[in-house]
Image (cartoon, rainbow, N blue to C red; front, side, top):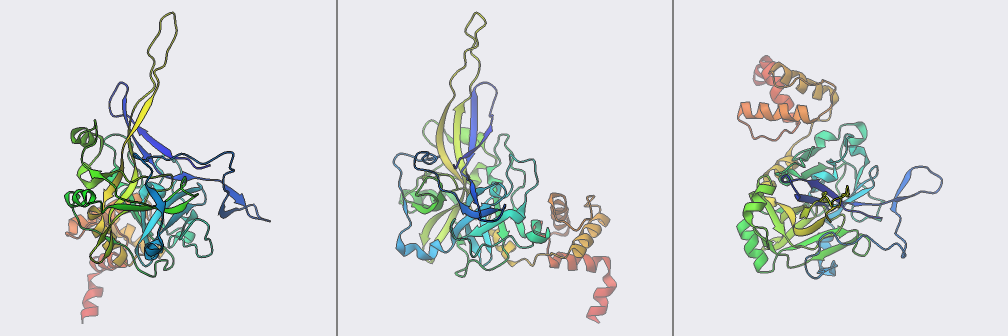
Length: 399
């Protein structure tokens, strides 16, 4: 059975609370014949058990199967499967061998274990396993530098850090022969106006829609405020709320990481990255009752809107990551760590692995040097540090 993971945080004391529910589906795998390893094909639920209910359908369910004329889009939007955790998210191409998804699909906030990037697979649909793609370098333990993420530790304390819940992954082969979808530069105000013209739509895989079929949700509303929840409250619940898009595209489990789209003059444009559902609730709490009884108040939860990251806030980082030549040689990774240590920017382990501490050190170095801040571990960074440490080499090359 699939399920939706709810990331619950409290806004204030008392009964009030705010939730960000992650639309990520969890499923069971059938063992392949003659092997103890899980197969890549999920087991379908029996008719008696049914399927998981929709996470966030606003009004009528407007989801429909992808029309035939959207074949090109279907080739650019697929699923990201975690074989270890048995979870499914949506992901879409932003380059020939690069996909974007929600950050929690790679780095689960409720997990105490480090991300196992070697277990991640991208495919065009859930049942097509022949052309699975892996994160580049993951099989040799060098996958981390081939992923750029807003954070690897999503904050669940309000204000919710949803604006950092994005990830871009470089894959080990070209899975997007048509290239990547364009990340729009349109502002939130422009997107709201386009939504009022009924031009915003979403494409995603949904656990509860024809069993992980690719679905399109049309004519989504996008607003700053919603019924009984104004912008003042929303801006307190979220970190950098101006970088978010609150929308009413109908979603289901596994729609985390899906694109919000418009049809522009040059084709489809991604205006937002869907990451979860914004809910408010009254938590169960003791009310007393006399004579030693402890009566519990019933918890109530209501969906406010779905939450997406505005594409214009992450477009530059996606372009830079696509162009970057990522460093994979463990010796060169150790060199970078050692040189940043000499600059008193890094104090972590020199084990040839890229992690949050090394990323932070690279960002600090980029700030010091007046460079664009990316945190990427690239060959150009290695050469730059090498030249600073051995300027005579550069002089000999020039001579």
